[in-house]
Image 1 (cartoon, rainbow, N blue to C red):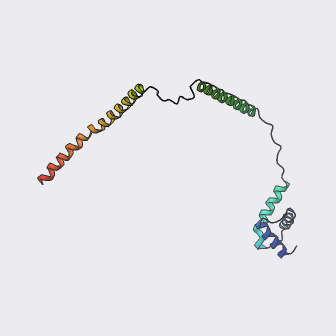
Image 2: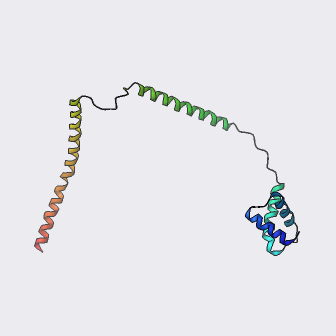
Image 3: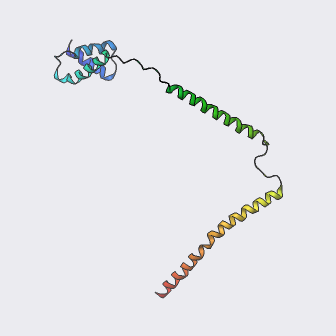
Length: 148
């Protein structure tokens, strides 16, 4: 086979545009020993691909019984999730659909609001008590600055 034809086929091969028949021609060419020096790198590649063509994969091993274990555990998990969804939805049906957690009686709502505001006020006052130290720090700083 002509060297120019082989080089053109190699260009097409590098671009991924060769057919299986053209790749077979290249493989047969590179299995010979009289390859030019500039194409020796391709020779190793095609020798490897020739070995791969002749090699057969071993038969698939039989399925192990662990696959059955996975199937049964997945079925059990699906059953547990379905039961949880059923019981969750069953309990939510017992609630009034219009009841969104709001308080309907005004006096109870006012009491709850007062309790919440008292709690917020308590937290704010606890933070305010620490400001006494800041005031003392400022007084001491002012004394030091006036002395100098």
